[in-house]
Image (cartoon, rainbow, N blue to C red; front, side, top):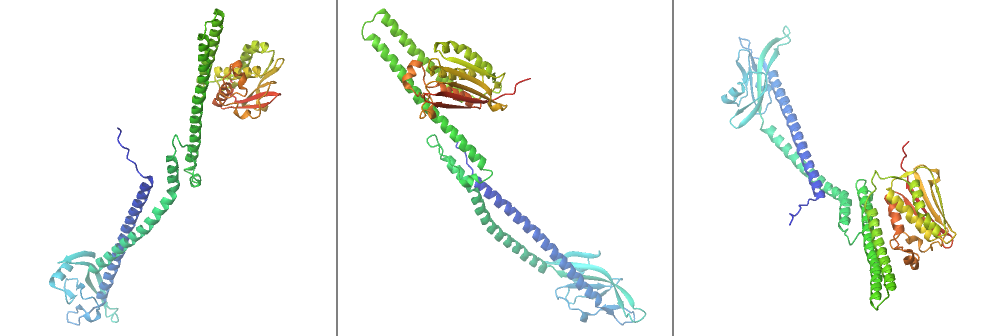
Length: 475
């Protein structure tokens, strides 16, 4: 017992893939947005630090002492109590510092000697600081003022910065989750709606079986560019398969009926011979009848095998024949039959004209058509066979076989190509026909990509027209 095949839902895979892609996009968007937010907040924080540090530079005043020093006037400063600052002279002397700062904090602040921004930590508190060298001009009205270089260090705790960043992170996460939920529901609905034609096609195809061939593609499937070719191909394929199954079923039934009839005739003939003593001549005549019936059964089986071969096998590219030459040869072989029937056989063919048909099949086609015409022609009648290009059109060959015989009733014309159909069943045993001749002709013609058509009128005659695609002749 073979292992069960695991099945996968295409719609679920597509929906899952789209949702996963959307989730990745949302995550990437959130990461980029958070990174941008953090970068913006850090730059704003640095600008704030530099602004507050610049205000320190403005608070540097003359100390009015004999050494002509400068100092930081705390009355001109309005700074947050938790911030740290320190102003140093070029010699390293502290000109001023934040009043609430401990020695540990000031030591950590002044530990960096490089100008610019930097981070440091004291205990659990994190700080971001800026250090720059500035020049304070004092007493501008006296000789243009005095330039006093100083070093400014300013730091602020970053807990407010990270608190705002965390809030922004949660905002982006919540917004992305909400957006993902809304768009996810919309995408699921949209994908299910757009995939509904595929599901309808799968449901209809799943109902097809050897007992039910009905396959009608929905309008939504036919309107879908990707599905329409598949649906139309399946519809055409199933029609062909249904026709083939019905043809095989009908062939089996008809063949069984024909063989049963022939076997019944053979059995009754044997029973008749065995019912009472017969003379040698009577036995001889009975055996000749039995032999004739056996030959008829053999011919029937042979024709059935020929028909099956023609309907199943495709034309090989190498198969070709010269149709005018085949017609001449077949006509030459059938002239004794025409003379016996006292029917004039007229042949009119063009020059070499190749068609995609095996020579044996072409001979069988021409022989069946001409024999039918001869058998249904009255004495002193005429049968004409013409091979020519159809209407002067290159690439199309036309074969016409016409007689002036009894004709075919209009009610029988639609059925003449059906297996075992005979318009006049009373003549079947006399002519030896089983009703397969025209079926074989049609199979040969269709196998070569051509068409066959019959026009007939009772008392006027019958004309069979075969059109075949011509092959290019070599120069």
